[in-house]
Length: 343
Ligand code: FAD
Ligand code: NAP
Image (cartoon, rainbow, N blue to C red; front, side):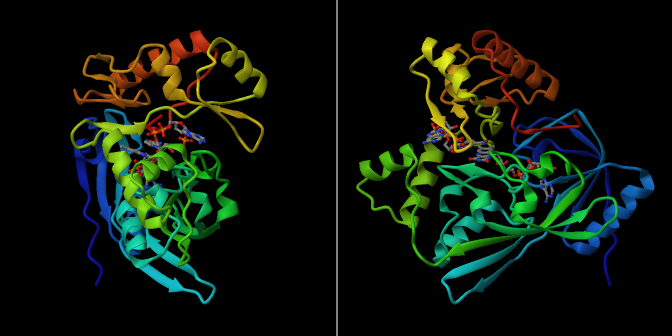
């Protein structure tokens, strides 16, 4: 017999978002399987509630009142299919912790996800922004995903090409925003220990510690670099990088680089130039600046912090000032990376 879905009204989300914003959800439920999800969709329809699927809350800026039903996705399990060609398919339920899944894969000798170690959050949220770090993006290892339509309850399979992945972006941030709950992600890894060590900080770390370029060493190096460099949300509330790196035309980049030749920049495959948002913000003197309980982390200009557990409006007003100063100085728009909800 299936148990009825437990709904909590006026539920605090303070402990469910890494920025520690004291938001209140109109309704909240934990879903641990397909039946729970279908029950939640029916209930939301009856109440005309919007649904917000929630993982670890590490890429969200929540408003004071979150309307509708917040679904804490708690579906668990990893299925493994080893193939004769040395490839391995992992079918991971959406509620699995991303980093734990990466650790499990490395421990089993399944390689390809190690550069993405220690990214906070759930497996189900990873495709939303095509998570990326240290030279690797999710799209390189994702084969397909299953998602359930939040209005009809119909499941749908998305192949990698259906997800329209790009830099920290996917179809789930655009046409299909808020329309699906991802329930399972299928990744293809390899039993061949091929390391991806072309990211400068990683190369430096491996050299400095006299480590060979193996997936296990990459995993350990990424974990160590991240621990040294990034504030722990449990200690200093944050959502990782608050702004995306701007992608600009070569002409635009050249004009900015003439004024500031020291700015880090990287040509992209599509011809555009990626500029380092952290360097732009740092150059304007924002690093370490605090006001009204929010600020820019002292070691990382892209990481906005919320030690005062302030509301989204305080944090976003501060972010808007940074955006304005970058616009005035460089004529560039900094795009906010985390999802602001409701928008
Ligand atoms: P949440 O914050 O819970 O949700 C984010 C969005 O995904 C929301 O719109 C939510 O509705 C949606 N969502 C969540 N679960 C589902 C689901 N099952 N189905 C449909 N929609 C869903 N990101 C990177 O790309 N690279 C990094 O290196 C990185 N480093 C970080 C470091 C720190 C310290 C922090 C705090 C964040 C970092 N992030 C990074 C951002 C964040 O960890 C990722 O975006 C992560 O994938 C978010 O997962 P989550 O479960 O916390 O998602
Ligand atoms: P870092 O190594 O000091 O690099 C700063 C920025 O420079 C990053 O944004 C990175 O872009 C870019 N960069 C560096 N070398 C590059 C190269 N060879 N080619 C293209 N871009 C390059 O960065 P960090 O801030 O400590 O982060 C390390 C990695 O973790 C980065 O990949 C970063 O994206 C990821 N990270 C992401 C978040 C998040 O919330 N999204 C938070 C923390 C860390 P990319 O971002 O495109 O890699």
